[in-house]
Image: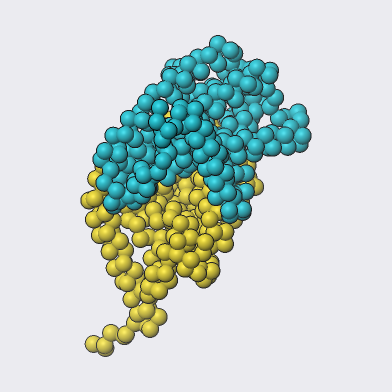
Length: 282
Length: 278
């Protein structure tokens, strides 16, 4: 082995160090404007669950309070509280600016640096996830103390662990999906519409627009084969005890397969995209 | 025959101002079409993107109406009329207000010098500069759905209904402009907070459903204080006859004055801009 070629362990150590440094840098960048940081991190993802709560209350009022499937009025409100918390953690398309860098021709500088480019967006994902987990834990504690009777509790410790695993794995899957879409800028130049389209689909399939339990059964069965469902709706159902370990395993299978496929797509899109890249920008 | 009297000075000034801004708008349209010639696939993508937006909204309410006959006093066919106006209002933003998404970035980078020194109304020059041809395609889809919804809800094609529909559509466009300008004012006061986008996202969740679901007091708040009701709730109420003709005209006059006040506030806030703010 040449002394100039780092060993596998050396490469991993270097990647880990780069990840840590980049994540700290990303945090410093995100917190540089404190008002914006606080507003974004506290309010992000709260608007929809609150508005949907009013809509669902009106629906239950029209039914005289009768449950819809397994979802009682109280269970629906708990669903929305959990939706707000899970949505905070899940990756979103604005984490990435790769497509803008491709469009402007700024990717060139990364190609001559002695590390893999993917470590940088990955660090941003890590920083975002860590920050959001802290925010969610704080919100959960405050909510539990302020509204002890109403605040949703996990069905069990296992259910809590299973829902966390699914939400984080699904979030990583969505992050990879957004990376692939950003790479399409090598061919399409402008991809923001694809991001927005994806967001509409993800939110609908994840049961974030209306709970999946209120959709027709065949639609729900179809959604249960998708990444968004097991990233948001699935973990909530497991947390609340309306889904069990068999559902968890199905979710794990769907998410695991999705992540593998998306990782392959990410590598192919990046490699082939670089072949087309001229470095001049638009 | 006595000579025709010259129009008053203020009238001449107003006409010249209108002509100048119409000429600017025509240039924006021209530039928007040229820009779209560069990104043809983007045209298709943007039309499809908005169709996804329409589909998820329509499906959500269609699914909810599998369980109930009315939601907060709105029947399924009335909600369809409401959604048609939500889409028309959204399409208006796509047609004209695309640049508003960039205000925070433009403030940080100091890109607004040209807007400040141009001899035209700064709100208009900034907010209307990015004309979108695909937005027009979406507008036709939105208005098509609105027409379908009106037909399904037995909205009779009478003269009375014609002015109600015209007023409702104009109001949902005007309301969109007011809100875009109102939310963007926050960017001048909290640089890099991304508040305009956040407020847009938060309140679009409110405006995408009839305001009656929020209860009487919050509905009044959203209609008269934070005027998100101007986007679809009030216009739909006008079309569906939920409010009378006089009240409809009074509300329209209120929104007209409110809009002028908001634009004035934006202009005043613009004075905070200092070329390089980050």
